[in-house]
Length: 273
Length: 254
Image 1 (cartoon, each protein chain N blue to C red):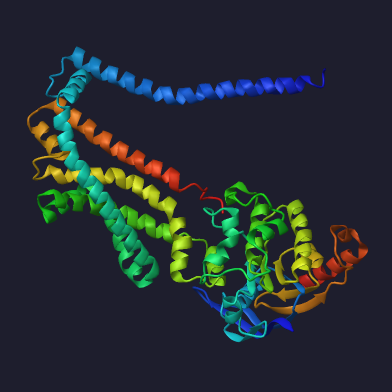
Image 2 (image 1 turned 90 degrees about the horizontal axis):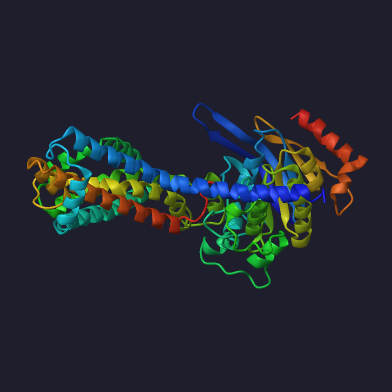
């Protein structure tokens, strides 16, 4: 009997441990909601008891009613922004992947232009966007170009690093197997670069949205960016907040979609080889 | 026939500051079907010598003949299998697909009739049932077994192994050493095996090629006289201890 006691105790411990883990998991899920909820409450209480004027800062209740009342109008404005961001995302990233491929195969081109790309990449987006607006003017396509160019540089930098992060032994293996350059690219480099690519695609999902919105700030009649400017000039704080919420909702959803695709594609543990 | 014949092979690398002579005037001949271990201090060029034979590194001087032809021809005809220090598996490919990689690159290839399939090779290295696993699900020793199976696909006549078990724990290493000898006997492949370990060099090799460092050059070829087939228990015998002691004495002069 004694011999079995520790075993039973261990099982109990195991069950207790599992219960504790489950509690921790729920805590991790619920606490952020509690945090957000309490901040909303503080927001509401400050506006209510300090009698802040609604055009300075609206109460969350007013923002919510505005969001519901003007939902169709908000969606009409989200559509062009979403189209610009998505098209820019696709074009910018495809161009970046193609350029990275050229860089990796033509060292001279890389040595000439990669440092420039790193430099441009380090300029903040909000500084780059107005320059591009001046260059590209009004209409839908300039916004797509802005979103695209903003996506282009982070992806280019990451993709070049990813394509070149192939281990020397893997390259020697390919040499021993007499693999051609295109086989090395499609069987080795491309897959090696995928974790790098996805980490920049996740950044690009939100920067493409920022690019589209900033593009709309100057000379645009519709879109989330135009609506932000209009609401600000009209002191319509409730509409401004509702618009910002729509923009963030789109940006976060975009990010989550990329993350889901990443989970489905990169199934291996990149650290272990 | 000689599987590998090096005559006065010299390799110079240009590093940032100076030219480094990795190998100086190395001449060796390796009998087909034999097992040669390469032992020497770090910087003696043992890995470089394997890479010259595998046509990865071009010698600055001298000549290399592999199976009577050039190293380049032997590589293109897939007469050479190479096992690296880390397994160099592609982490997104299953175990089976890693072993089959040689069929997918370097021109479409099919297995010669009668040569072992990927599944048979995995069984040979003791990994039957693991075909669908991904590399990160395997231990270090198992990954190295996969890379040995990959190197053996297509039945190369020469197997070049560059410290394949260097990163493994001693228990795993001993087991793999014994299995490598069994694989060598079953396949009849010529094996050149680089190691840092005196015991590994003496236990595996029919001959030990001892290299001296800076510049890398041949110090001595020591024949190992142990009864065949070898087993781990032999490492406790006075005969083995004497051989190992001799290797250690030579190593101190390298």
